[in-house]
Image (cartoon, rainbow, N blue to C red; front, top):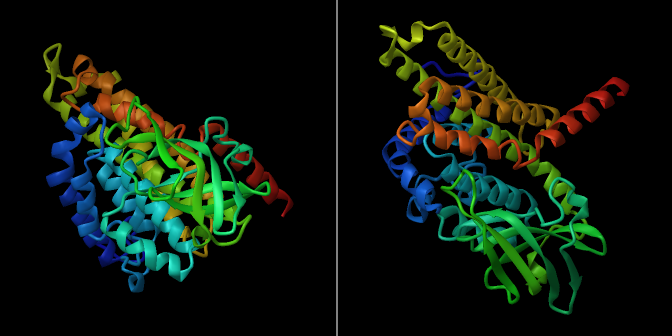
Length: 384
């Protein structure tokens, strides 16, 4: 395989080796367990900890801190490859490695890093992000979880909902308001007053858990304040771009697998005395699905080139996730249509991928939020 700075998808030998390692791991270890974990609706915790053995949980953390020191393209590669087999398991990885680890490392001080990174980089502790609330999703400024100061630190009150890794998680990056300003905290399960609420059962992405987090006079020590009071909104916005890009990469993995399934099936299945792929309508499904998937591949990897700790591209990440979310669902729907009754059943996996694809139209920003952001940012560009 050719690699180099001119290769959009594999810009270095390090990226090539990463892709091969993740593809092999996905084929040998992720694929065999995906159907069962979807059926029972639970995260495969021992397999998740294998991600720590492979060095993937600290993918974007610099090497001196125990990470791999890689970039946004590497994060895209991991989420892309694993989502070909199990988007739910990949979502658990994304919530841990991108929403917690990447965000925490960029915002925390050295003492906080020394305390928490060893446990989350190995997978000993599974982590997540506490942002969405029962009455505040896309409208994050409406969050009601709040904290007040005490002699020893802070006391948090409120609830977070739809939290990926909420069942297994030992530590969470939590946003709460202090004097009306969004502020970041690291909250672990040993904090008095922390508990888990309801376990939430889902339509798709069942290879990861979802639960409610409850803060009932939750005591958080002063050293668990991340950054400064009121700094949470900046933390949130800075990390959303990588979150949205890696979710787009999940959509790409879903679309890739669905295209592969429908091409193979249409070549093997015969109807009216000839292969199914001789029929014009089937050719339309396959051709359009392939074209959309290739366009998505180019968009996702191009945006990945533009993101870094000190490089932002909200227009790019919003555009990638907006296009990715609808593309994955459309391609999965086309695959079900090509396979007919077989597509509607579990054998060929496309019904599971269709269910998984829907989440990305909602999670990490709704379609409507991306449309709003893009319109606002593009209009601002006219005046800039």
